[in-house]
Length: 152
Image (cartoon, rainbow, N blue to C red; front, side, top):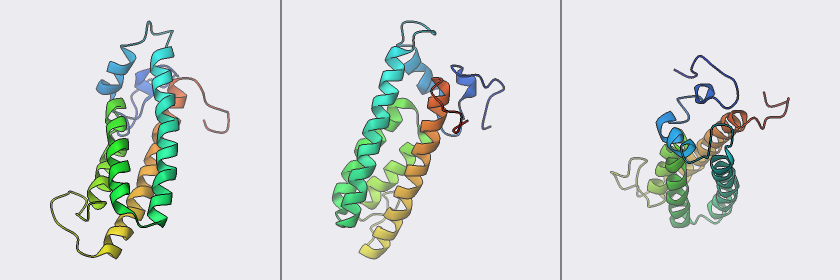
């Protein structure tokens, strides 16, 4: 199920359940003073947006330098932040980046001896993570009512 029945901004029913774990996100919303005053959760989410953008920038730089251990570290870092907000698809991709950066397969179960294979998989997984971030960012901006007419 991609969307619940309601879709007005500010309603968790408007969030795509394949992108955001509603239960986890509702725990974040529970820290707000009220349903009308979402300053805490909005600040947390928008801080994450900035953090993710700078982390993806670092990933791009480290990919160019073929520093896969740093990519693993960045994947681990972003995985934790994503999980805390309930961004399940992004969390899963970040875990794959973490595993691939240690020369293992996406699951972390098997070693990957070929650096070129690791780099190719890392490139695709980073692209996937960026797309998943964009999807989550758009959904959360709609939730908080911060969407330009072009993004709707």
